[in-house]
Amino acid sequence: MNYADLTKQEICENIEKIGLPKFRGSQVFDAIVNGLDLQQISVLSAEIKEKIENFYPKYRIFKKFVSKDGTKKYLVQFEDESIVECVLMSYKYGNTICISSQVGCRMGCKFCASTLQGLNRNLSAGEMLGQVYLINKENGGNKKDRKITNIVLMGSGEPLDNFDNVVKFIQLVSSVEGLNISKRNISLSTCGLVDKIYELADKKLDISLTISLHATTDEKRKEIMPIANKWSVNQIIDACDYYFKQTGRRFYVEYTLIKGVNDSQEDLNRLAHLLKNKTCHVNIILLNPVKERSLLATDRKFAENFCKNLNELGVSATIRRSMGQDISGACGQLRNKFLRKQL
Image (cartoon, rainbow, N blue to C red):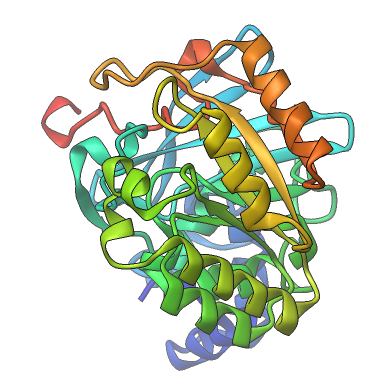
């Protein structure tokens, strides 16, 4: 059992079971939300700390990188010495943290670095929360004065491949007793696990759903995204329509332009036909370099023209701003270079 995985009430119940007053549970819960390690909780005696030591979360910021554009990438280490990366990006409307949901990834998308190491394990809800709590504290925030306004589940891992823990994370991080981040400020990105999209829609969590599409035909998608061997493009879009029907939230489509693969006029026309009259928005992404991959990016001018034509064909689209590329913190670049044997 790890207290970071529990609600405030559940922690209080456990605190009472081990012979401590219930109010101590509230103190422990607040300390976790504020990103404190056990020894930093000044209101607890050494005796109490010893009693709860086995239950208290043990994660830390292992390393920090700062980009020339101000983006910050953090390596977060967990008790078993696993490491994931998360990224903090600053915008005019606030700070967005991109967190990981798994150590590695098994989806095998050919434009993404996260999948190169395969899937090591799922993260618990508390380990996902830990990324938010630590980075919030690192940037001067706490429970009452958050420095994180938005969360995107777009780091290492496929969130819907870790469904139960991700749902629990969303419920905990949006709790009034916790950081109270609105579900409307949480985005989840998936490569298209159709059955889980339906399951997520039925939970009506009111979060934003983003689909990593990146191709307009099943044949082309299979070349770069193995998940396409199981779920078709049309099945994914049908699931997105259901998500909108259940939640009233428009969905987002990520489309990374890859030179000679998905950037032809035919690709553009098919994308417009696929999404026209849908309640969605397309994020055009410039492919970020991954040294192990041979895929090439289209240039900025071409991307701008692709986006402009898409809008003219009746589909809302913008080019996503690339941030943190010089620290390998941009879209598709996250990976765990720090293996356990190196620590």
